[in-house]
Amino acid sequence: MASSSLTKPQMRGLLAKRLRCHIVGAFFVSLGVAAFYKFAVAEPRKKAYADFYRTYDSIKDFEEMWKAGIFPSAK
Picture 1: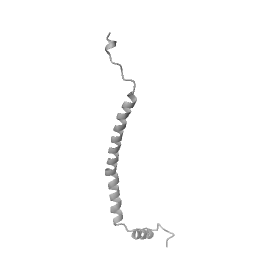
Picture 2: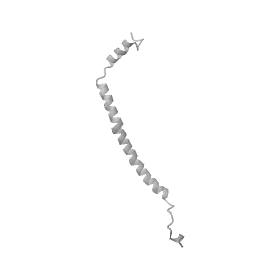
Picture 3: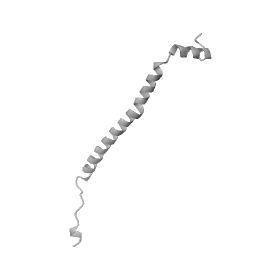
């Protein structure tokens, strides 16, 4: 008689129910990771490149490398 009082486990739709929950969770986790990457990596990297090229003089850099002998064909 004890076995008749137990409820049956849910067998139909169990995968769909779990997938729905996990897909929603994965979506929000991926949004969080994308936002973190944008603000922690991409924005500082763009700022560093902008700061570098703001004062970069390619002619001066070429002349220093030419004097060092890096370009033997450019005489």
